[in-house]
Image (cartoon, rainbow, N blue to C red; front, side):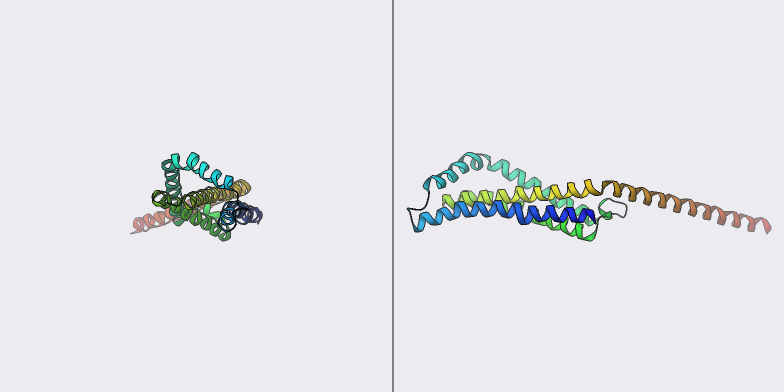
Length: 204
C-alpha cells in the first residue's frame, strides 16, 4: 500500500532519525561536556555549560507557565484523539485506514501523550531541583522530545490523508451509494409487504 510505505519511511525518519539524532546530539554535547568537566577540567568547556544555563534562564524559566500550558493542551488533544479512535464508525475516514497505520498512529499518540505528561509534571517539580545542570538539561531534553513527537504525529497524519485522500473519498462515496441502495431495497420490500397485507385484508 502506497500510504503505508510513505508513512513507514517518514515515521522511521522522524522516530529513528530526527528524534534520535536531535536528542542524542543534545545529550552527547551537554552531558558529555559536563562529564568532561567533572573528570578532567582541561577538556570540558565551561562556556558551553554557561550557554545551557543562559538559554534556560532566557527561554525556559520565564516561559514555564506557557510551556506547561502547551504541554497540557497536547495532553488534551492526544486524549481526545484516542477517544475518537476508540469510537471509530464504519463510515469514518479513519476506519478506511489499514490496521498497521492505525497501530502506528496510536503508538505515536501514546508516545506524545507520555512526553507531554512528563513536561507537565517536570515543570511543577523543576523549581525544587537545586542542581542547575540537572534542571536545565532535562527540561530542554523533555521539551525537545515533546515537540518532536507532536511533529512526528502531525506529519504522519498529513502524509496519510494527503496520499489516500482521493481513495478515501471514493470509498466513502461507494459506501454512501451502497447505503442508499440498501435503503431503497428495504423501502420497496416494506411497501411490497404492506401491499400484500392490505390485499389479504380485502380478500377476507
